[in-house]
Structures are given as C-alpha cells and as structure tokens.
Image 1: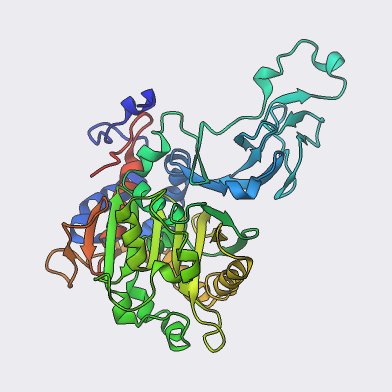
Image 2 (image 1 turned 60 degrees about the vertical axis):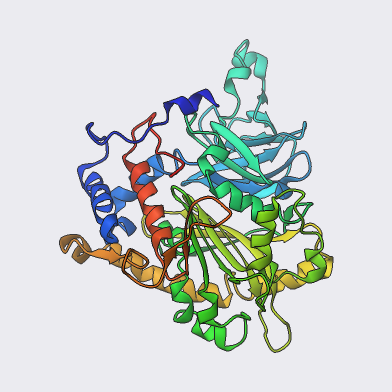
Length: 470
C-alpha cells in the first residue's frame, strides 16, 4: 500500500473546522438531511461553497485530464483544467505522460498558448525561460550572465502531485496524500474495467473535445450522470417520439442503480434475463461485439455488458460517461452504440464549461466510427437533442440555489426516491459486481451517495480522507 494511504481516516467532526461557518452549516445540513432524502438548495449557487470546493474537492480529488490517444506521439500535448487552473498534459520525448502546471517558474506567466499541438519545448513569452516536454528547465536567454550557477533542476515546471492512467484515462491530483487512483475509485474500477476494457484492444478518442459554456453549477451534471433516469420520460419525451432510442421509456427504467463506492455512482438499463429481446452490448454492432471477450475483463463483467442497453455513470467529482444506442435521424439510420465521456468544468458558482469527447473502440471499422460519431453529434453534443434538453433545467437549479429566497427559507431539494417504503426500487443481493445495488432505476440513492461523499470531502481537513469502501 502507498504509505500516504496510512493517513486516510474519516473526517473528525469533533474538531474545529477551517470551513467558513456558513459552508460548514450547509455541509451539516447535508449530513442531517440525507437520512430523509433532503439536500440544501444553496450548495448549487453559494459563492462561499464554490470557493471551498476549489480547494477541498478539486484541489484534492483525482480529476480526469485526458485520454492517452490524444497525446499518442512524443511531444504531443493538450491543455486541461483542475478546478479553474490550467495544466499541460504532455507526452515527453521518452514516452512518459506528464501533468504540468501552466505557469513559468520565473514570474508565473502562462507558458502554453495553444489548446493542443506537438512541441519538444515550451518557451515563456515574458523572459524566454524554456522547458522541455517533461517540464524540465532547459535554459533562458543569456543564461550565464543572468543566472550563473542557479540550479535548473529546482526550477522546472510544477507538476501535479500524482498522475495515473487507467485504461488510457489520465487522472491527476494536486494532493500528495491522496490514495492511489484504483483505491480512490474503489468499486467503480470494476465498472470502468467493464466499459473501457470490453474491446480487447481498448478505446480511442474520436476527434477533439467539444467545449461549450452553460450557466449552471457543476454538481448538476455530476448529479444527472450519477443516475437521474427519471427525467427521461418527461424532459426527453420528444426524443423518444422520433425514434432516437429503440427502447420504450417504461422498459428503459428496468435496470440497476449502483452505488459503486462512496461518491461514485452509475446506472444500467438492461434486460432482466439473458434471452430478453432488445439491444445487447449498448447497441454496438454484432460484428464489433465479436471483439468483446473476457481477455481484459471477467466473464461476469462480459455478461453484464451483453445484457446492457444503457450505461451512465459519474466518477467523483466531475468525470461522467455514457454508453447507449442512439441515432440522430431515426428515419434514415438505425440506432447504433455510442460512447461519450465528459467533464463538468467549474467556471464559478453559476457556470460550467462542458468538455465532451466521443470515444470509439479500436476494433470499430472506419464506417462504424463515423456512424457512431454522427449519432453522438446529433444527440449528446452542443447541438444535440439530449444536450439542449438537459442543460435548460440546470440553469434554474443554479438560479434557485443562488437566490435570496432559497437561503432565507432554508429551501431543500427532495431526493427521497428509492428510500425504504418509497417507490418500487428494492435492494439486490445477487449482483455480480461491487457496490450497493437496487432494481429498478426509480431510485435516487445514487445521488445521495454523491452528496454524502461530497459533504465528507468538504469537511475533511488536510491529511484526512473519507473511506473508499462501504
């Protein structure tokens, strides 16, 4: 075990917190209200809450940065964010992956002026300090006269405290005491293995990410992709009517909600029995499914994938993924499997930038990749039918959360669905994977799991970490 993990312990609520009193009070309200399915609305818009999140959530958690297929060649780089701070993700000249703070050591000036590219070096425009693709300081103009014997080794670019890759998904954390990535993922790793290890040769990003700004709080996206399936029959009613998805709404709600591990949640729409009709393997073509096997995953994971129609999930805090059969034009194209990954990038308490990647399995033919890309573009993208539906309600969720009335009325949101005696969801004991599992998808425990871990992270002081297993 990483020695840093020995410091992990549940937050000590008996000690004085360094959180501002108002923020601490909201976290206490989450803790007290979750047992009754209640969340204070103000966490979706309060500026003090947001500024605490930048340090206690984004300054500590493992955050998704890029997929390795975006930086395939030595010298490739992309610029990404942790919280509101820019980092350069590079493939150095030895093939290593680096996550470098985009700030010159000399005066803190931004050193990378393009979103992506290929370069062996980065040169600060202010005084010309020059760094290699692994972040090492190479030199500066008139070095001997200006800096003499100053150490170059001590003046390279600052690096993320830890960087790890999982099925080519590059994550980073700014906290040197953070647990190893797989430990942080806990049971969620089983489900990421299932999705990204399904094709024996893995996945790759299809094109550059889409980026678009929405006046909403980042938690609305994480909440939705943790498993908010109940909105599908109302908010997306028009999409069902044009045949974009091949399964009726009521049947689509049959499936599982899974609290994979603290903070990380997901949902499967799937056949209850192996011989039920309907899409298999998330609607991907049968010819591609021939490459799906248990070389990288277990037979149990393969069988779950075989029966699955929809997978949607969120890795805390803001990395979400979705696999399902879609079409942008039901009159001319049958639904086909698509896979998207995305981050809900915070830009303030009332705004996010959505980064959205379309992903394909490497064994897809060029025609299959093109068809999946077009289907995803027409449904889950800046101009997609689902995206325009989803983001509209989030605007008013955030507006309500930042309102004076919400604060003065102690306004709370209802997350009771699936609690004992409420609705039809029931616990499942014979599920092959990890986590707390419920059948059907009429259930909101997946979101309660998100907010319990969120409150624990917000109240944890330096050196403290919540548990990663139930």
